[in-house]
Image (cartoon, rainbow, N blue to C red; front, side, top):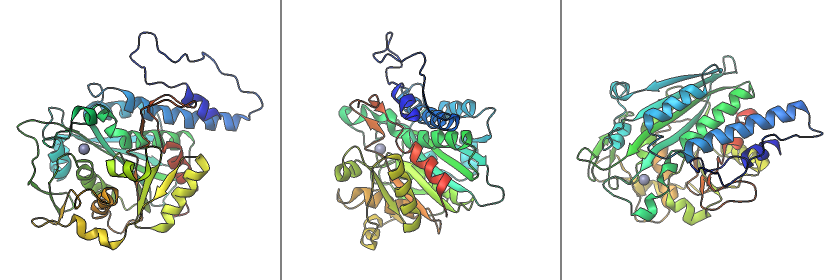
Length: 362
Ligand SMILES: [Zn+2]
């Protein structure tokens, strides 16, 4: 209730002279323990950090400024922040992230957030897609499809919000967050259809649609994450319209290589009242991302099963790590308000991730 109250006070009208939503100056709770109040505040604030990052316009939030905002958010907390700039990305061989960002005058970044509350145990990893604006690149989106594309960094913003909550609650876990940040734009330097990119992992990707850029950014981001040998890894991405076709706009799609971890996430989301639904990862989909000129291609065969073929693409970069991919293309950003929260960014999955990290038995 406390978290929901805070979340209900956050609005998308951050640039309205007289904001539509009138927020109370003070809220008093009766009959609630201090513990519940503090926990609710921590979770509510974390959801709102995510929503604020997503609701800001793309001229305000681009890879460098996203990294700056995260750096100042975690200043003086137990979360340490590492930012890889363009030079470091080149040195690290993150050619997939660099390719997606090549068309933009704003260079890409990779953000690493470390929280150590768990002694010597191996960490859990949270990975987020952070395409701070997605024009589609040379596979340009029409205006109607581009209008909300400031929200294409919601996965990365969710990782920031969840890390904030995990640290604030002092969970006794080691958790590392990874945000792959790039702006997908059109210029003479844009990556092109037919390009073949050698990812950081060494696997090659054939680009057949520059608007399927999220999985390309995640290819390198996941590769950096698995180098930290996580016990389990969850990635969040506004990845596919196909997931919205399959599940509607309120439900996040889960895809996994490890049923145990997926079950844990479903339980956590159920406890928090966030609807999720698992999609199958049958072998028959593996064929659909094979390329004729490279190891894999960044689109499936036609439109069918597009949420799953995207996950199959990602599976190439997770190694043996137990992993769950969460497609939040539907629920991350809402056209309409609900009685419980404003339209715009929703902060979906922040509370479920915090709950999962707290309870995970992996
Ligand atoms: Zn795209």
